[in-house]
Length: 288
Image 1 (tube, rainbow, N blue to C red):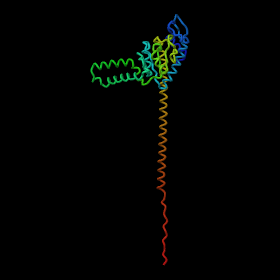
Image 2: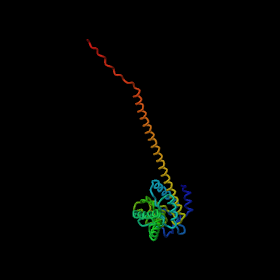
Image 3: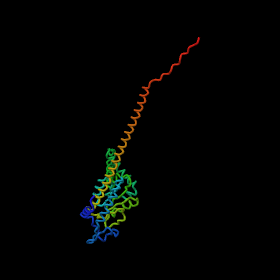
Image 4: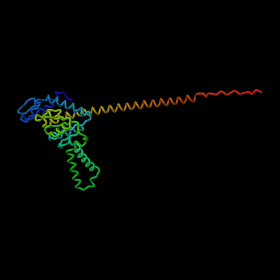
């Protein structure tokens, strides 16, 4: 992680500080606004840096604990960036369309995912050869549609522990569902949004591709660090367990050898010990 000065410089070059027009602003963003220039609000990069580092630290711990973080970014500018970053750290993502109930009705969504996976399996094992061409075409189209919307959450077996959202105003349905379920929320918040709606807001330009990229990549780097630390801890624990098992086996082997040696020593003493003679009874003489 870079120091604050270097990070602020990168944020400045990426245009993170550019907000919306003054007439579109949300008054609750006032603490994060540095100034106004030509009718456009300028975001305070000091606040952005602080919030970004705090968000990254928390998400790093979430990743280190082995929990899933769902990336959400369906805006045109964010789709490719969010997809690339989420895949890099093997996290679920939604970049096409947020289906209503994706979290609150998760069981139904999982059924759709299983249906998509079953069609993929049929494609792979040649089961399509036994159905008509029309049925095969229909199933292929259904799979493409589901893959487009649900492909990013295909490996998500349960509700995620956190959501990272690009533009909380655009993704208000996802945010509302997460709040209803008590899921921790992290989001990029522009000057036209309410920062109090997310647990960890990052005040930044959520429209420029460069701004979205630098924020998302910074978060992804922190998550990658958390995953690396988790793997290192697991490897160390596995090594300790292996050493402990080897020590236990060695101790058991030594104990068995000692018992065997003791048993052999007892047999040898029994073989070398002289036989005890029983005294013969004296002959009786008869008096005649």
